[in-house]
Image (tube, rainbow, N blue to C red; front, side):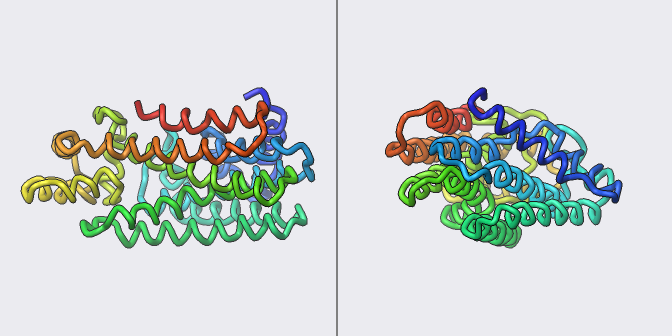
Length: 318
């Protein structure tokens, strides 16, 4: 987007420089993921949030790069935990360099993220991003504990996605507002916006794992099911279905050998009870809440960008 292009160019330069290391494997693994076509959505939100207020302290680029490093560190770690073979359309780093290298380079990226925060000299922003890092880790552990657990509730699921996804969106927009000199009420508004956007984003991702709102089988469809993840479409189906349908879902859940026939049977159950459309409706409500959070922010190009992002996120699933 043109309004954030200069800021994002600076962010990309900083990401490139801070992923360098005299240990060759570090930039090889880091850049394998960083260069794989990610949307850089979270750092763009930081840059746009900072630009809203026009009194930048010069830290927006550092914060944006730190947010992106935190995000990519979690992806490297998640692929090891989930034993994922693909990431962003290419082989996951763990399949090329191994699990140990993926974990350690993820740790390197986290270290660089915290170093950039310290270099900013803003202890308030350091607190926001440090707390986010801890909450994200808690969310991932909670999700792991709930894997394959048919007693997982919709409330459990909300706690998981708030922690593992929405928290970083919230932190990204909040520290952006802080870098831009936002007053406390505006800072809270941007944090609310980021949290609601993050909830919508993850709900849509969970629908996309089953081929989108229409439930069409395709490449990598059903990875969450095979990994035993209790996402909302599964939870809603379990709550509504018959005992026989429950057994169908249970036999595919957490089974790495589940094939297209198994997935098609699960998708048929989802269609019968409307669980994908119900999940999308919930995503739309969070997207609308994100837009409402911007109501007190004066009109600007940057505000228009932020206002359009929730629609972009939900449209991906249709």
